[in-house]
Image 1 (tube, rainbow, N blue to C red):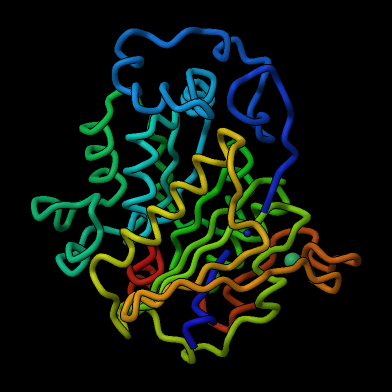
Image 2: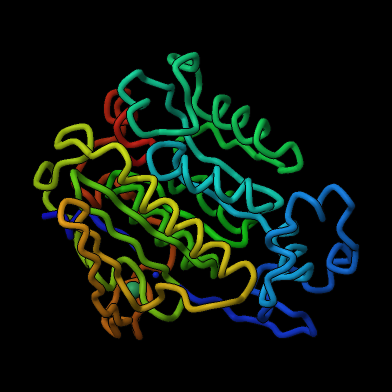
Length: 315
Ligand SMILES: [Zn+2]
């Protein structure tokens, strides 16, 4: 059951340049003059622990500062993802969420505090991120991401991070990221189980793992089954590190690997993920060439206010 609650994996075209960090990921303009702009003294102090790392250095940090990352959901997963990316110096973070902070969110959603109950999550999130790092630019998308707007939002970012907690949004973000040629860092949490992977267009997608959504109601969400408080911190931190590696073009991502975490026994396992030639999205003869109606695809009705509360953000 938990495996159904999943997520994620991808790898864009990487372009090389004479930089200490790895190749420049797709979507990042290596000709941008900003790459040649030295860090300010304030930036050099703030990011000094990055700058002394041989495979990061000022070149890697400048890539971070010039990158744009979209975080879908400002909930359990989106909170640590956005927070750590902000601290790390990602230049622009987009946040998609249309929910308000509920007191039951505070057990795990670290972007929001007790004083924020009843406030819009995007506003609370933006204030928190700015307080941690005033240099970050936060772009707010306070609307349900859907087939009408997804391809207006997703393509302007370099990396997409999925923190959604409903199947319709998960398939939608998967399809929009693939059709836009963007890496998708996926994560999911439920009870004590966590999963994480990275989808690079052409190397497998969520539909390769899960061609069809489960019948409505078969797989509970965190509002129904619960989730242990610190688990999104674990999985979200993994998603943040995956994103940082993609932006800087270093290391090995979870592409083609699905990481399964059982926090109750603290066992970590990996499952190989392969692109399915029969995949309806990324296969040899794709049937899905544009965004569809994901509510119908997943057998659920249009989002109600109650469903939106649950589905806007993971965990
Ligand atoms: Zn696929």
